Image 1: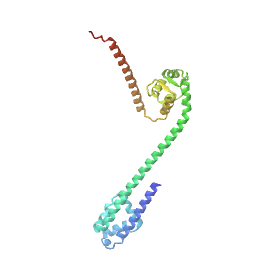
Image 2 (image 1 turned 60 degrees about the vertical axis):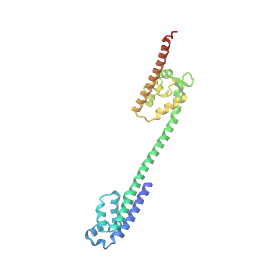
Image 3 (image 1 turned 180 degrees about the vertical axis):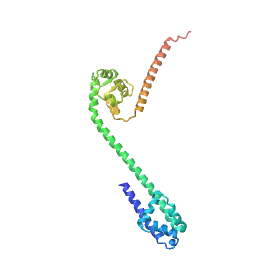
Image 4 (image 1 turned 90 degrees about the vertical axis):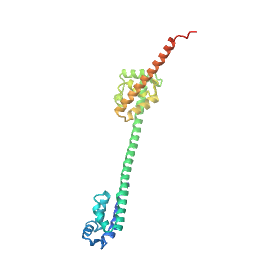
Length: 247
């Protein structure tokens, strides 16, 4: 509707300038005494439809100098103001308005698509929650409400992993899935963390390269944690072996 309204405004502006062109150019007998200008007027401003078609060239800035240059040279003040106003209003302002309307329409369409995708993702999430809860209950054999790496690995070794779970979660094993879900590095995943983590894995749209980067970051974090532990043990050993000061 906005685009239609914009083009209707453009049509009205061209009509107004077409009428003004007939009054200022076509009906000016003195101006038309020059044979070349008279031929130009006959070809471009002899009627309102023809004048509007001529002014469309000002919309696209298509070789307009051959139209306004001879007329402005013949009658500089009046026609200079006429064509100057025409270029400012039609060629610059209205075209910027049309461009802005089209861009706004594209942004609105993208926003609507994003909202639709969010609604679809929310509906899919509601459908997935019962399945994820059932999967957690299968892994949590002791019913503690928490699962650790051993329980996850045993679940995979028993061959109970649902079809396409690894594909949907973009992992290769239950151990990798545990590493993805154990965000805080506590070694334990609660029911809430399990559900939220799997939903994020299933519904996210992350490139493979980004997933590999995240995996490498987790590996580096684990290596740094082990290094810190080893350094602490080394400090304790050094303290034990350090000789007591002599008196």
